[in-house]
Length: 268
Image (cartoon, rainbow, N blue to C red):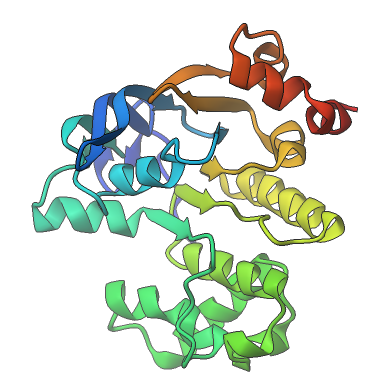
């Protein structure tokens, strides 16, 4: 029998009631261009946090900074109870082992089958697992992501765009991480496919107790599944609140985004 996960710890690191992600004073520059200038953000355990902002506001840059894929110019980032800016191998392994990432294009290895893609993190972190068990775990994750079992042996090029995103999600779930990062997961999907993917994310979040950091421009996703939404504008996070509260925020971009024609349609 598998012991239940202790909700106060992640791989032995005590977190308690603290946010799984805490960002303070984050600054990101590209040459003379300042993308972030003092970003503060908390992501609470068990929530789906949507992150929105106009083009060039640095949504993906923020995600990469939190994950340690980009070194910010200034600021502090606490992730899963440790310093996300640390280069200590044990700390990096803790972060990588406990976070799953679905990049915007899926980022699957084109020469590997879906099953082999899902097994990549399993081979890295559990090299002693028998091949048969790795295969069964990959099959489980593929089914969790809403794909048929026969997708396991297909190459990414043999899948539709929506199926590739689900395959990327299956790989992101391979290590049973408590924290999931999704970068524009419904981009390029038709409305029916996008709604189905939203429903899948909410179901997985509730069933697995996930915390989800969701970058999106999809207003339907914000209204359907997000507990709170963080708005990036003016090089900062100008608000973090449920969508209903953001609709009344006196900020020009927020008003145009949430109360424009598409916002009204999504709300309806």
